[in-house]
Image (cartoon, rainbow, N blue to C red; front, top):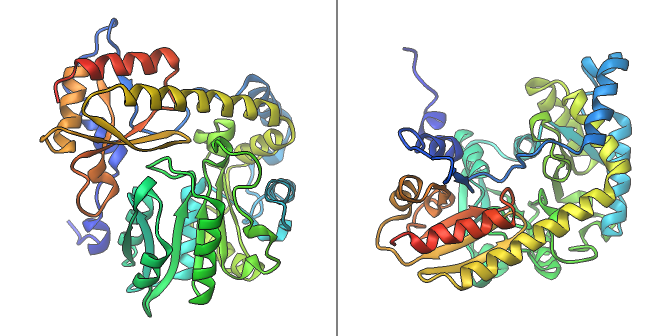
Length: 388
């Protein structure tokens, strides 16, 4: 067998796929089906009206089946620019938007424009594992920034980690995996830190549509020079349930867009036409529906907080958007505890060890957005009966 690329071979297996392998040999009778809280992706299809619009496009629009512009369809770029400017109360132009094959690709493209092997990128921990994986397989060091109370990152601690090879700081808010919503002032302090050191702030707001706060979550886009050092990432997958159509976005300065175009032309040529058509229709028509989805997710979040508060041996570290991040009192390391949960309780969740370079043996992530109120109640019934 030919040699494998060392950095890629050293990168961990995809955590969600690894967890699914724990289901081998397990049985889930009809009266106790599997409760899958391992992945933060909608399992229901898009709303019917959106599916109908996409179906009509598939039947009547020849361009729906062709390559499109590398940086995305002009109408979608313009619509997202307008929506973003309105949401944050700032200024964003269509030429500052790139449409990507999902938000993960937007992150990969951002890193491709910023860093080379041997460079460093600061990631708060617990981190989103795909970010750390992409950095590792490209020979870029992910520098962990441990979070403090409320799982919020500390700008002063981050400043101490900045060195000559640092190229960016990455923030995810609402956070995956912790659910923490970063205060606007904290995001702006990190932006000032990045600017002072001439590095980028990559801000991933995949879950912004499910933020519990009202109004703009920060004021970055009100800075007329935001494009100098801010790279903003967004996903249509969660808002419109378009996960299988792979459509995300990056918002950045036009100079960076020229480099992004090179990257995208080599890895995808253009984002899915059907995904872009669906995202555009959603932006134009689904605001009330998304608002209803947000209220439902916030209701589930409250149910999770209340359920965990009444559950012996489990403590909430963070809860928001799609996630609860918890600490358990068991002496069993979380990877082993997760395997026990599959076979003894019919629950699949992810251990905290998947979200840190080390540690996390007493932590779990619960992605609760895909289980309704009855499912959440069932989850806590099983956890109460489970022996830590």
